[in-house]
Image: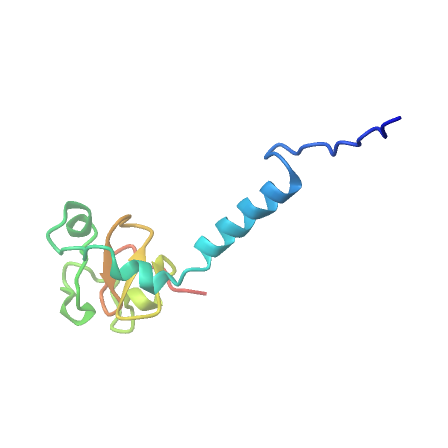
Amino acid sequence: MSQPTTSRPKTVCGTRREFLAAVAGVAAIAALPLAARADDLPALSESDPTGSALGYKEDASKVEAAKFPTHKPTQTCAGCSFYQGTGPRGACTLFPGKSVAGKGWCSAFAQKT
């Protein structure tokens, strides 16, 4: 007589092994440094329609005080909660697909906590 085989139930993603492989793949992609990915992004131009609307400047020291009275000299993209990077340039959640200067500024500045 042959012994009955026991089959393991499949998860939504297939087998447990397939599920764990998928999770490991996603974790590996998420672990890539954000700065490395920001280097691949084109730089946001000050004349970009969205950047211009938010008063984006590559250099925060060149922000017009009369036009943006809430700007403070200590505010830069690198200190903003929307900035995703650690180097001179980084991704910004406000400007998908573009990188911004760490020493830049826009009117949507929100201090990192």
